[in-house]
Image 1: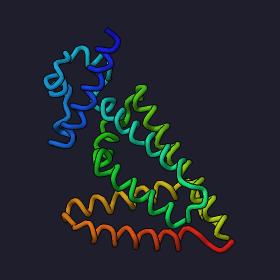
Image 2 (image 1 turned 90 degrees about the horizontal axis):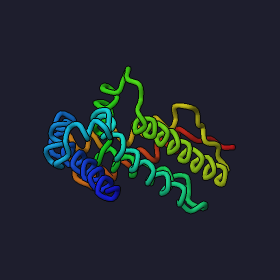
Image 3 (image 1 turned 120 degrees about the vertical axis):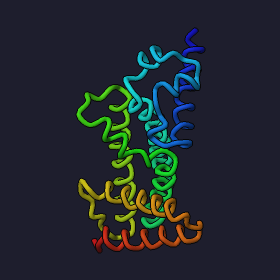
Image 4 (image 1 turned 60 degrees about the vertical axis):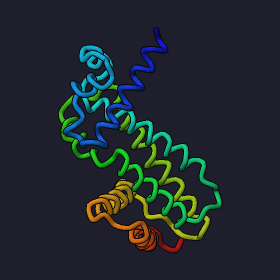
Length: 196
């Protein structure tokens, strides 16, 4: 019975992700998730307080995979290579799940966070900390100082998400997006570091 419940929960999360990709935030409704998975709406509301909680789980899982990926980066990787890897990861994450962050934030604002939203906030905070530590260490190895403050990692995330959004809206070719990412790395590297 427990395995069946776990599988049904995974089915709910998969159906939710599919709905997001098919029709965006508006398409993700508890009623449609229930219809696609054969789970009653009542059961859904026992597992999740609302669609923001459903959205938070796969996004948290994605962030946790990113944390593991960032932590596994070789210690001798150059600052610019770490930054480029982070920008690519954020761009992919935005394309996969992040484009609905603003919708999620709007619906979640003012509500007491449930366990899934709390886990998402914690994972986001953690990935920013890991990214910052990796960039700080690389800058020090290169004789530079990383000019990190509370907003630096949020800014890096926002730039990568902005590139992903622009690329999607304009249906840019991969080469053009890659050039934008390279320029972003060079600009951020120059603007966020100084000689030690």
